[in-house]
Length: 95
Image (cartoon, rainbow, N blue to C red):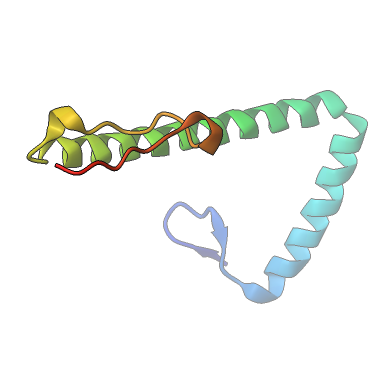
């Protein structure tokens, strides 16, 4: 028994464990004998992770930029481009 109209998720919890273990065993065996396929899958997963991380950073940057642009002193404020404390300084001055 599947969930939803696309039938991509198994809804029956009794069968799900059996299917997961059988598919896991066969997939593990398949990938052990075909390391190039496993490497290809890993490369795609790493690329997808990097793309998602870059998209998250871009969204955050846009959000920060909009906050800075709405600030009364946008010319005096800038985002720090490094998170390494040895490369960054902060000056707190009066006036």
